Length: 291
Image (cartoon, rainbow, N blue to C red; front, side):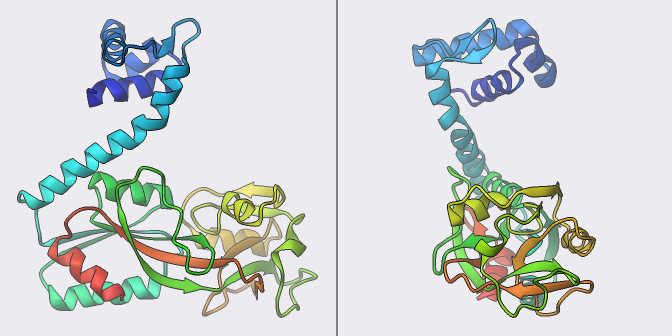
């Protein structure tokens, strides 16, 4: 399958429009139609209903595979580029907001000592974006965090051709305003807060979707949605009484909030290093420094 035809197919489906896809991709509408027709001819099945534009049953099946196919092609291209002569004196690192910052900083210091002339670039990203950037070759390594059961790996995006290594596991805590009735408690069970209002901050706290999946509950209603990897915004919103948040237990409690540890044995915060293909010398030094 032609990768560009797959990208065109995904764009048409997302926009539900041939003309809209043509404008976004910089093609004529006729060119978009020809690409879809060529893809349908190759697969010997109609992929799209034309009026209205929507995937057929065969198109729906292709939608399940296409993103993973394109991600693997990007990963292969990036891996070949690394081996074939891309700069080896640079580390392009992505980190999520709660991914063991002390361990990350220590590993960067190790990299600097071992390779003092290497260029170190660090970007703070969301979890899904960080893994995708590693798979596509935009980053050499990412350090990502998330909710997990003890000794279980993180649930990374499906189809991402990456390897993962455990960095740390940590207890979880609920952030409460200082005047919350449960703030004086020494420990809490997550079920006691299922009906409380929560912040939905998927890149700066445990995502509510992950919390619901781990507890098998549709509870934990969101009162405010926060986008972006900014833990300080989460703390400020909790302090203002806008909602609760689940985070790794902080070594130093932030001001104006109270972190109360969870006693649920099946839930913890896990951090992993993620990479794809052959590591450059700075990336290898960094990963080893995380150990």
